[in-house]
Image (cartoon, rainbow over all chains, first blue to last red; front, side):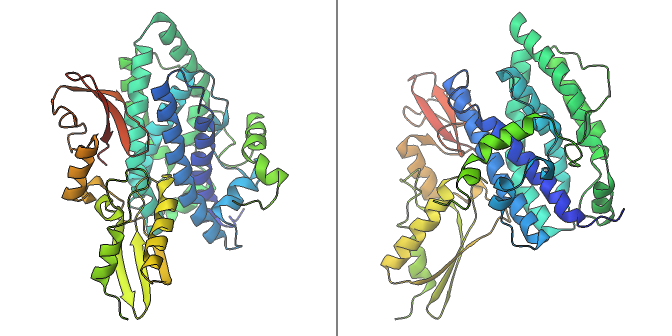
Length: 253
Length: 152
């Protein structure tokens, strides 16, 4: 099947990952375990929403029908989203939120680092901006995973549980499809599968320090980034995130 | 009356960072260019953090300040590359930050000293603070918590 607009599809994947994780992270605002973490999570959410504006802004231009970043964020429904399933599942406890952030950051840092060499200069520029923030996020999420994993019996057990829960979702990051191949052929991006090795190295090193054992399975839940199938949770998340535009279409302030 | 680029830079010195008002947007290093053509002015700004809500206010404040000086034909361009870095903070801006109680960024990744008592015995409380550009630290001598302007 010929791809209609692989660059648009690719940009939606980048933007939707940042948007969905940004929104999920923002759900901690006001309810995080301590004030410093509350502030940290809100700031990380802000970084991610800012990154979303750049990716979806460019996606809208590439699509060429006049849709803005806001239109793409607020006026699409579940099946039009192209984010990883791992990012849309509910936050769970604080430990699981941190584990998810870490598993994503460990991918995002080498991914954005390599995208800085994209033949598409706009993508290279956005990646150069985002990678600075991603590096800071990775530093924080890996330290938090280690602190909680190598913490108390309770925190270690919760981190082990978080890893077991999230592991089957992590594989989706590395499953190449026709869009990825088209981007690789055009020199726009590398194949995500190329990063599985480096990602695993990072995850293994942090897990060892965090006194955690990686699950012995490479089964991958997938369908989010291709749009084939999302979890039931994304619809609920969008209902909250998009409520204003659904209730008052076109509202601005 | 013809306006010069130097005049526009001077006016921009009067626009404070909305969240850290002791430094100007010029000190912050977000103004990357001023271009005057006939009676129209183009100001190019580079955002600090992708999602920093201050950027919208900065653009509005620039417009207000330049309009006060008779510039009605203003175009504000946003440029993301090269990405903003704390290397662009001016020496004056760095000194003002410290006077205000915010430790300026250091390549080593942490504050050089407590901005209050100047002790070098400091520890990190959190990697994030009251704005995306700051982290929270604490002085182990005077025990005061303080903001550290993150180095990126």
